[in-house]
Image (cartoon, rainbow, N blue to C red; front, side, top):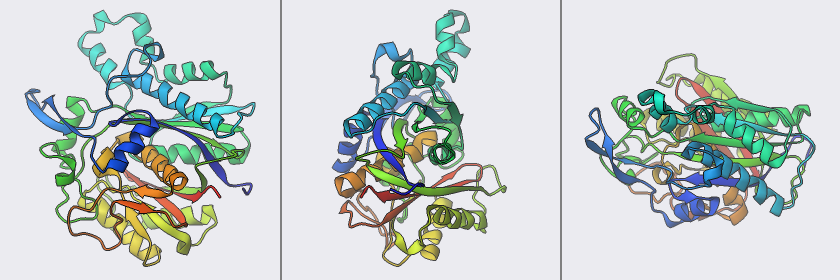
Length: 385
């Protein structure tokens, strides 16, 4: 491993499939989506909607909310997984928490019934509490930082962790990306924006790079990864990446896509690899027209004709601030397990779209993620060998 290569040494996950990375992998491998039809949505909360929510679970001692329990559970699972794979923490282990909306369940209760919230419950809603309790649990003393870049927050967290490791600020980083925000208000307003589909199951609505796609199913997740330059049996390696900003619109992608091109070029340059070495594009792929057009354009402009593209959002949903974190973790696990658990194609689409369980034959992965508001991100992953 070169001085600039960083290993993904451990992984933890909580998704709509359940609590644990194996539940995530088995769910994706089944080809069945994690969405359920639930009530309580719409302006008057008298409507049903297809959503993907993290089920109740976790350790009660980890916090009063699903959010706190998910943060602690995924970070703990990643650390224990990394140790089983031969990683030993250095003296300076830091934590980066990628998040956008935090603890929406508790804040909703607080604003509706603030006189009934105890002081310790209010403290539990602070952004510092869950990371602080995790650091105390393992005796880690490196820096702790929260980052947010909307849907691209996971990639932003990876690049922040890489900067720390490259600069020698830390020996290791635990990256956690969390978003449990499918409250009725959030789902309803995203539906009003025309990007969330609530009236049908994901395969009928979210078809990235295929005909008939109308958007995405809103979802929740928390995922954690241990990042280190000293991992002995890593899932994959992080070679580099980049971020740019469109400075164009609050929602829409700049139709000229120039900053997206800059992001792809800079990511490849930072990773020190030519575009010809990219075998797979793990796309943002939310199934919206403008995102699918932008990423398919980059695929055709940058990469060789046999480079495949896929998105796991038809199965795991759009996990908002945790989206790219979940998707990077799946790409890393795919290298470790030898195949991609890509969603099956359901309609005519892009000729390079990967459909269903597909063996990995080597080559690098570029993971792109486009955050609402103009965030462009891309990271480059490699097999562990």
